[in-house]
Image (cartoon, rainbow, N blue to C red; front, side, top):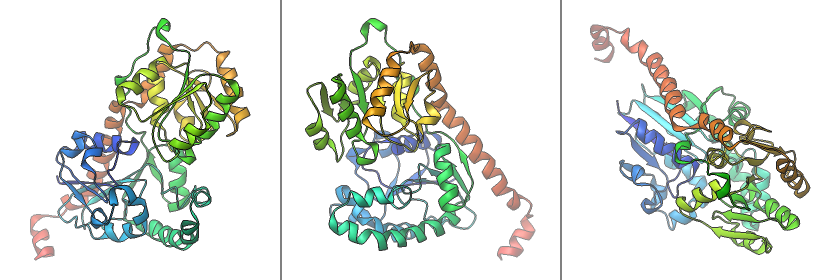
Length: 380
């Protein structure tokens, strides 16, 4: 069986790329198609596959300015020649699902979220953009929405990474979906003895506006509690500017440093609304509780009062209240880690394989009912 994986862009190793790694394990023979490919920025596991970029990859400074070429990506996807592939898995968050599947191929879309910058967070992105982008966004986004909805009809089955995303798929595409949580390598983390814990809280992940790192910074400035920030992104300099004397901003760090801070922190702060959110699961797999905004994917992974607490609104006062509430709880690290284990890679492999195999069986069944003589008459 020939398998094609379509991913929006390969310029770093975030949650979407962790899903691609898992799909590479499931289908080691798969070819990968993407808009932009920066080999040095992705894992060896991904690089081991044949990777075919679209023409976007040849445009000026594509590795850094790929988002500027978003209006051209529908055209680029439709130029991909996927004849001969039996199974196509698109990984959607940026444009990926809009390929033209060949007749007879099964197209499964693993949807991290419909493109948030034209759908559920359009106004937030537009408000934070420069003057020229604010001027161009309305007509371009209108065009992209029409294409995005029409290209949803090219998908045989949507898989959503959370119930939250399943709701967006239903609202924006009018389609049903099957929820399979993304693979978190929970076995890579483990709790530490209480004597080895630190006295700091942790915020980790990409520092971008919709994740609201500014809220956590202001809250911990006010509480005068220690906070360590790990992650790069467009808000890194602003976060450093806002950070008071009790806040340490480390920027991007290797996995070993992140893992150590997960295991030693008092709790993870997660102030944004995420589609799923691997970071809270990794912290919980380390036995540490999570203080999360009570919306989005975190509500499906964090168990309030068992593995963390929620705050009801994105405000400094709400975060402070949640920190105080957590300090009054006696949470068991072993129970927290056991709770996180249900979101591991093993569960992803089992659920994804069962779903795709079931689809393939139903998809190929009509062919099996055609006799060789009938097939020759039909095709001859």
